[in-house]
Each structure stands twice: as structure tokens, then as C-alpha cells.
Length: 345
Image 1 (spheres, rainbow, N blue to C red):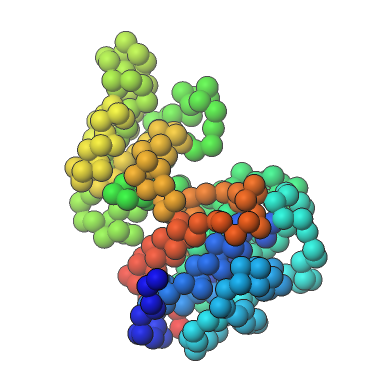
Image 2 (image 1 turned 45 degrees about the vertical axis):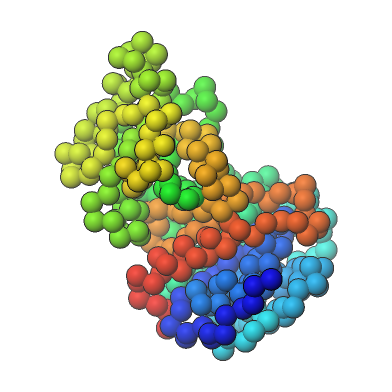
């Protein structure tokens, strides 16, 4: 077992808010495991934004050498080994609930945690937020009609254009569409939507990752990039015009390339990022090379937001087997991005 580094974190480290997500899911567990470990001690100052009683119960159940400290504001507490600051924004303590079950109360709580994190980030009180998973059914039961974090965050921050980029291993992938049925793809793959994804990929790679002239590989939709119309015309009709328009604006975007070869080239460093047309086209190669450590980055927001790339995993809640790897990487990425910006006072 590795021992913890002796170095004490600097007061200049980024202050990050980690939202609990759905308290009935694995969010509290992966947060507790993340902050109890030593890997983040020289990376950031974390504040958990979530239910204080849930955090206490989770730490006790996992038998961690960790103590939750309730805070009322966003003060940067002196770092002490074995402690974690918890900011509970709920007006009334969250009542007992059943783990692993979608419910109105836990859905409403998860939305409240996100809203508080966004508020603090917009005020400059914290340097960014890292989100544990929410449950779409639960937030809808609570009256939140957004399909997920990305759309809710765009609404709360009034972001005009935003989108999901997922990072894992050597791959950075921006998506034109995400949670949609395959049969609905052709109607959603418009030139405007593809151009937006290419612009957001360029924004992320230049401003968040510091790549001056990023090379962006644009995935085709159909096998063999349509084979000159034999297997489909989306490449010629919308994807190629979008790529050419991006190049006219100075973005180094490729013509549509067959996905079965593009991702291999990107993994070898020939492209700095990839624009995928749909969810599984990008997620399958990502999870092959970085399962358990992928990070979701929302691009286009006025605040820094990263997230785990997994759900609430209701089937394993309470078993103590949830892997914190994705959350650890999400915190590390948010901290690296924040270090390129002024640190909150």
C-alpha cells in the first residue's frame, strides 16, 4: 500500500465544489473514497456540496478515516488530514430514503446541489464544479424537465452554445448528438449542428487544453464515409460542407473520415480531438481505452464543469464496491483547467 505524500497542499490550489449528485446513488460513495485518498491533496481544495447527514453516514458505512466538517459558506478551510468540508444547501435536512431507488426528494436534492455549485462558481467563490451522477428519472419526478446535467447547466448559466466533450486516455471527443435514438440521427445531423460541434471542439482544445492549432478529425456517419453515396449521403450533404465551413474560419478540421480508422489515428496522436456524430460512435472507443477513468467536460459554459462518465449505478449502491476512478480524474482535470485562470479569493 502506497503511503501519502508528506507535502501539505498550497493555499493557492484551486477551490473546487464537488456536487453530490443523487444521494440515493453511488455519488456519496465515490466522493468519500476520492477525498479520503491522498491523490488530490496536492491538486485542489475540495468542498462537497451535498447532504451533510448523507455524507456522514456514507463515511461511517465505508469505515473511512475521514471526518465531515459542516461549513456554512465557501471559506477556504485550513487543510487537515482526514477531513472534508461539506456545504449543505438544503433548507430542511434530507429525510431518510431508500438507496438505489429514484425518488422525488432525492431528485430535488440533486438539483439543489447543482444550483448551489453553479451559483458559487458564477460568483467566483469557487474555481469550478465537479459533478457526481444524477438520475434522470428522479430529477423529472422533482419537476426538472432537463434530460441531464449538460442541459440544466446551460439553462442555469444562460450559455448560448454548449456541448459535451468526453476525455479518456489519448482521446478527446466532442459529440454532435448524444442521447437520441439511432433512427432519429439523420434529421439531427444538420450542417448547423455539426459546425457547432466543431467550433466547440476548437474552443475546448485551444482555451481549455492550450493547444494553439489543434487538428480535429471529423467522423463520418456511414461505413466507408458513405462510399460516394453508395451507403448514404450525409457525408456529402451536411458533414463535408460543415467541415469546409470550419476550415474557412481557420479551424483545422478534416473531411469526414471513416470512424473505424479515425479513432485509431486519434489515439496515436494524429488528431488532437475528434467530432463524433452520435453517442456510441464516440463512447465505444473511449471506453475501450479508458474504461472507468473517462471524464465528461461541458464546453461553452462561463464556468468550469467536469463530471464522472457514469450513472448513479443503483444496482450496486451500498455495497461499497463503486470505483472512484472517474471522479478522481474529473477533479484532476477541473483543477488543471482552473490553474490557467485566476483563483478565487
